[in-house]
Length: 556
Image (cartoon, rainbow, N blue to C red; front, side, top):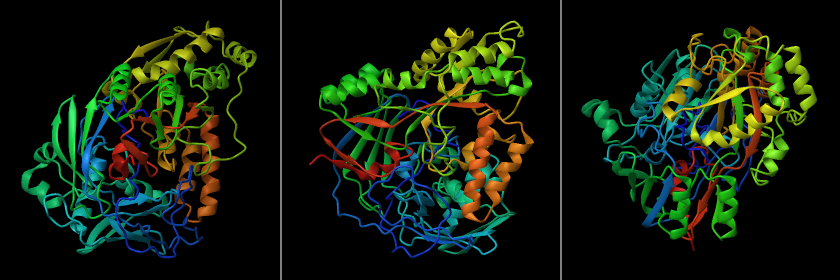
């Protein structure tokens, strides 16, 4: 799984991005759910919720059975990068926070959005008011009870103008009012119907109102607490982060007493640590190493949704770069031999295709969609029709990439060289890359304008908001500038008939694809390599290890 860029969702996140099996919940009721679609399925904790034409929904958490556990042992994980080292998801987002806090909503194993901190949620008949029934008996790690006041505080802070979390704008943009009805009931009222808001709600981690108001935000960020299965012991910047299991956790108590997360930038060092037994789990591993470790007897476990490799073209309408011409962008796609990449470099672990933040089989996916063909003749013809390279004052296309993008980008550059396209790769760190990729301010002088920006990360269950960021004029990636795309998106987002909404969304994705501002390359499972001490890792773990820290088992 790609971890060097903090999922600033992750949109991201993201996301994307959900904790599963977070607790023992109230029995599920026979209800309807906001539309989501499973991408991969495992043993479900509840049957997939059905979809009704009328969006007056009432969705309960899945029934889960907790097992009495006494946490033991130390689980050691080696990461490539700690990124922002954030415990506060208002500062872009957080990874460790998903082990320390619980989300308002979550997903079941069939990708239905269900309750978590909220035992259930309902949407009024006019689709304007969301009502969340908060689970009773949840305690923060300092012993304070979690109530609806904490939920309101968390949602308000998460969606505030000061929040840099990529999910914040979606709640902020459709907010009329919210209220604490009683200690265990919270309501959120929108200006217009928007059933997909369940997705950003599932990204809101609940944090302690009284603790933060008493001690201040800076203190909270240095001494974070939450209601989740783990609590912070110590962070040594850019070195280690140590967490300890809570035996008083309100849901499934974790099997591992202690987790130590090591920042180990070099892949070869991470692999050596796994082989020597110094760590139990490593991630961000190249296909060659994955195959090697599997042959040596180490386990490969999928730790989330599939990795999607793609490239995007910011500010195509504001540049004189070759990417301003749609024919050049199409040629770049036709020049890529995706199948060869998947068979050779990705060792057969990947498959060609995917669309922006949209896995094969995801919500809105059209089964007739196929990857762009490998057609050198057509690529050269498109370049000639665009007048490349002579028409352009500077025919060199800049590519901004992080270290983990380099393998994919070097392969793409090789294919592009064969058809005569000139490129230059510029290596940037994760902070710089985030500023280039999340660049809603479309300044013509921005480094990203006219460049190619790769994205290699796990896709979400439902890409409704991710796709808006790529294809609409209000998106954070500076790639959309088409009023027709904006209108199609609004239709898909606001349609309260879930069957028609899905059709609308498929049409929007197809229109966005035809703009050629993003090109899908490949799709590959997210693998972590695990040592002999680690048992099964369960749940759809869109944020990786931390979103299911309490479901990682000891080896039997």
